[in-house]
Length: 170
Ligand code: OFO
Image (tube, rainbow, N blue to C red; front, top):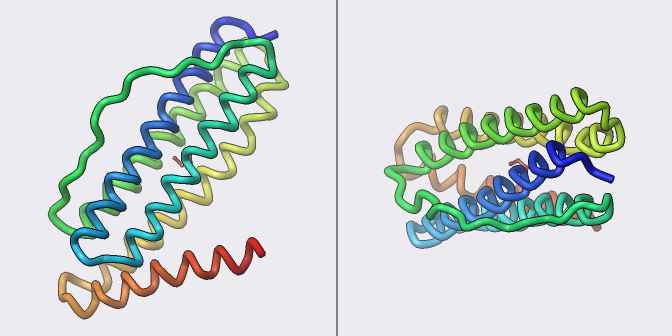
């Protein structure tokens, strides 16, 4: 049975994962409309992944005798000045989510809820991977400079990252 402090921390994380999914959806839409199809595919996929992260938490809370709750969410940022600014926001958001997961993990330690702490390890590892992928992308965009030919190649590369992930999953 989940303690109320752990249950409410997990519910807050559910809200944040749902917001992440909506934020990446808004970003994917911006990329698609602005002519970055590769980046759009990448972000649509990220949005789906965040939804999966949310669902995994929802199922865990319910399985452990708690009740997953949903909240209303603020509207995500939908306008960006460039692909560079957009991915700067992505990295900032991932860092914020990592801090949030660490906070929830800290609460499980305080409450001696090692089962939930163990469950959260998956999220901790996932955040390390996501932060490193996003900062790699950001480095590439920065190196490519603002020219449209550089952005064209970055966009193709982002589209290719999706193909690689699909092949790896098969
Ligand atoms: Fe939910 O994986 Fe990052 O944010």
